[in-house]
Image 1 (tube, rainbow, N blue to C red):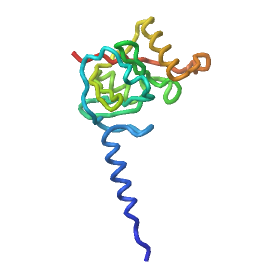
Image 2 (cartoon, helix red, strand yellow):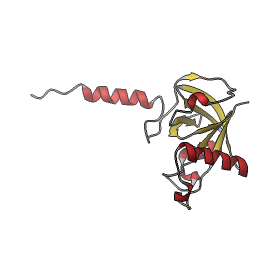
Image 3 (cartoon, helix red, strand yellow):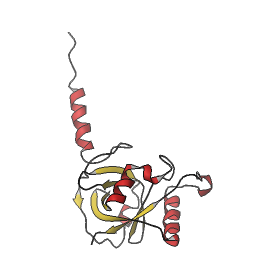
Length: 159
């Protein structure tokens, strides 16, 4: 008689426990865990070597995703999909959540920061944030899909 391996149930429990702490790769997750950081952050250099962050939206029913980010001084920016996924930002669930309720949380280097997402529409700020994102992630603007619409959100300290 063949014995069942305990690895299957243990693996399931382990994956479920991780998913409860946020997203895993391309799969969204629930509420983010971690120590809550200060409201005011004068510079984000401590996170400049982080490749991705985890963004939590919809406070009443938390939904979290892995995302790119960039900091410029005391400002933190998160783009909608710059290379993959839906070309229209409104087709991303996290974007629709932010449009309905701008209260978000972002986890950087293990710390969670409570923020308010504000879509950047001012031309110079958008251009600076986009250029910083393209530099950080080594994206060539000439190779960008011209049909892809990119939005950038600035994550401000909550009042």
